[in-house]
Image (cartoon, rainbow, N blue to C red):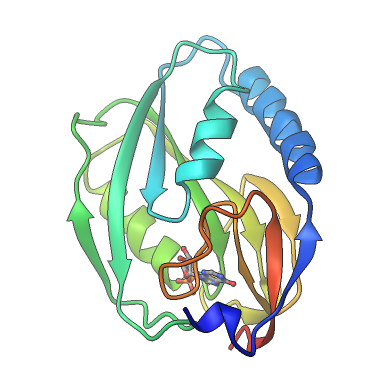
Length: 181
Ligand code: IMP
């Protein structure tokens, strides 16, 4: 794959650093949603590892849902045009929904998604993102629970891919020589 050629991956956040932050986020979410009917919605594919770790750090009676999204664009950019590849299995009307996303880059995907979910009349929709690249913001997005703010670098691992590869790296790594834009 391309990654083994000219690209080198530099560790940005180790597995231990990610795990520590995920524990903190889980504790915050547990506090904020105590007594509520929480549904967490993992956006596939990028957030599957974050979701797996995060949900085990939330001490609540919650439901897990998955929403498959594919955004049109090349390997490192988003067009904002999003296709739903796999829908939720249950209605979310009246539920408190927490979207679990890997990264908010331009914000185009999240803007589309929040609008899409609102049409189903949830009681509330909040967002938990592992990473945020504020320098790239096109649409303003409120991130209620954020793992790390990162510079404009292309990152892989912990669920994030480069041309579908590297999702399985246990850490978050910066791909050297690939700009975020
Ligand atoms: P946005 O619509 O520009 O905010 O892009 C969101 C999606 O683009 C994310 O859910 C990722 O799938 C992908 N993406 C953006 N930046 C990166 C990155 O640095 N590494 C891997 N995927 C990324």
